[in-house]
Amino acid sequence: MLTQIITFLIFFAVIGCILYGRRLIRTEKVDAVFGNPERARGGTHWVIVGSSFLLLVWLYYSWDIAKSFYPKSANELCQVGKVNDSLLGLKYQFPIEEREFKSTAQIKKENKNLQLILEEIQNSNELNNQQKTILASFINKTNQLIPLLTNEDLIEIETKQKIDDITGKINLLTENFQKPDYPFETEQEYNERQKAVSEEGGWGIVKVSAGTGSIENTIEVPLVPATDRGLKFHAAAQELNLISDEFFKLRNHNPEFKDQIKSLKEKIKAYRKDLDSEDLSSNYAKNIVKIARRIEFASIYPPNALDKMQNAIIKFDVAQKEAQGGLRFIDIFLFPAGTIVASGPSCSEQGSGRWLPKPSDTFNKFALMLKPSVGYKDIPLLWIDMVDVSKMIGFILPDWIADILPGEYPVHTKDGIVKQNFKGYVLKVVTGDFDLFKVPVPYGHIWDSFMRVFLGLVFGILIGVPLGLFMGLNRFAKGFFDPLIELYRPVPPLAWAPLIISVLGIDNTGKVFLLFMVSLSIMIISARAGASGTQLSKIHAAHSLGASKKQILRYVIFPNSLPEILTGIRVAVGMCWGTLVAAEFLAGTTGIGFVENVAKKYFQYEVIWITIFIMGMLGLLFDVTLRKIIDKTIPWRGKG
Image 1 (spheres, rainbow, N blue to C red):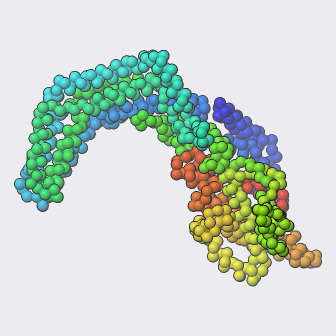
Image 2: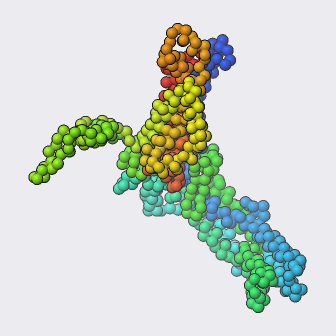
Image 3: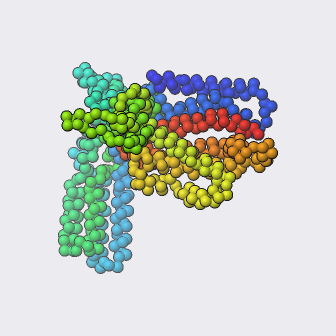
């Protein structure tokens, strides 16, 4: 229901925003020249159109629209897929799906193989004339096997009767299939089926284990027929499987064929008995008998022997397509780039709906993974925990503060009592071993990744910006630091990752230092470019007004460098996110990259898309924040 409402809202939003945008264009002032940045400001309605378009494409190609408007369509298509899978083997015997009879194609193929072997034998210099004559006779006898199967006068009455029986079963199935109450289900069978449907759940439903709280495997497509139409196809598929098995067990082996192939096998066996297994003549004889066996096990019949059966199959195929009714249009229009297919007793999504998870399933699983009771690998994506302030104090204050104080730490008495002294109390404070009051603190995979990027970026800014300004203003700094920066800057961050993680470990220290290295070079280059690009006339003007070096740096050079610095921060954010995910792929037990790496191993497409969505949203959050900072700190940009 929610997906249906969202779909309608998206349509109305897109249409409304487009109409509003066209009306705004007609009423807006047109005196602004082309290229004026003011013409690109605003346009929130076009943002809505773009976002709605992306969401609509996701809903459509993930088949979530089909799931919301026709929730049982996948189950019905599953049953139809079972019928098509059962029919496939039978239809391939006739010119229905193929251009010719399969027996015709088999005869052409084996005749060609025999002809190729005969030509090789005749042109061989390693075989003597006697061997060539014997092998040619084997080929001739193998060729003579085929007319024994295709001659209508030689087919046995029993074989004809079995073909007629199979044809009759197909016609009876077609007749019953067209009846509205097929497959004649009793009330008890109906109740048992509905119970099985209820236990199995819906299409793509997410189940959470009651005992462990972990997410169980999702059912891709329900198998038990949930509707009367689905039951009709399910029952027909079961009957077709029995008919198909019966047909493929049938062989058109008349007495003459049996005698001929038995004689051929015995002669080839006797011929190879006295030869080495590696002998060329023996290998040719072995290949000839392989062809004879393929002819023996192929379903080869006289040209018109299966005409009635072919017509019966076509008639049933037409009947089953008619029985699909509106389901065929649902399949065509609401299941783009694929459909539901069956393979044996199971069904699966084949197409865009397989690798593009449905938004409803994705957000459902996202909500479950946010909870501590479910999470991902026992850790939620994001949650709030109440943490005592003392723990934060103990984390911030170094322990050596207590060590440098005069005196000794308290020692227990002979009664086993420890009396605290001043130094002991200070140690408790710097280690956080006391109770104060609790404050909400976020934690989880998202928070870990966010903090790693944030800390790496902050350290890169705090060190990179001053160093970059220094290099842009001082000849010594530029000459001394430039080779060091340019030596490691072109190296891809992932090249440093194994070394840094090996030295600093897989915890936060190694990842934050790697992100610091990524952001440092970008911030140095940005700040240096901003400082060296300051107009000399502005600096001369400041000198003439009596400004000191510090004032020139603060009021002239730094403001002129801000556009470059803030642009560098936006670039560094993107680089840090890409590097972090790769680093968490290599080593880690928490973080968005770790979640995606584990999900990849188990083909959990919903989780993979969740991590992609989270990274995009966090990156957007950083970027929007920087845009606001840019608008506040350098409002003159583009107006000078």
